[in-house]
Image (tube, rainbow, N blue to C red; front, side, top):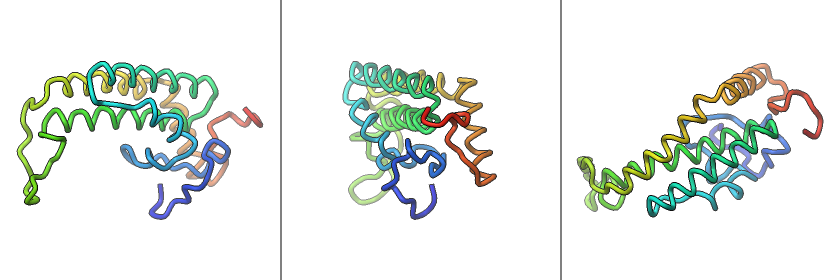
Length: 161
C-alpha cells in the first residue's frame, strides 16, 4: 500500500486499489476484510489460537472459492500476524522487545511456551496458504494487472463474481 492509501475504499468492490504490500501491512485498515477477520483473530491462549487460525483459514478457503484474491491475501496477513505476534510474546515478557528505558531486550528462548505453541499453530496454517498454488497464481495475476495498470480484481473478468 502506498504512503497515503485511501482506506475508505471498499476493497471487495474495488480490488484493483489493493496493493499486496509487505508482511501484515493494512490488517487494521483494509475493509471489509478487517471487520470480517479481526473478530476471528486471537492469541491469548493456545486453544484461542487454534480456534482463530482454523476460522481464519476457513475464511481463506471461502475467499478462494469466491475468487476473491484480496480476501485471500488479507487472511494470509492475519495468519502471519498470529504467528509473529504470538512468537514475540513467546520470546519477550509481555511481548515487548524494549524495556521501559527503551533498551532492546534480549529474546528469551522460550519465555512463554504456550505462546510458542500458538505461534506454531498459526505458522502451520500460514504455510498452507503460502504453498497454495491457487494463492500463488492469483497473487502473480494481481501483481501483473497492477503493473499493467489494468483490472486487478483476480476474478477472471466475471462481472459481479
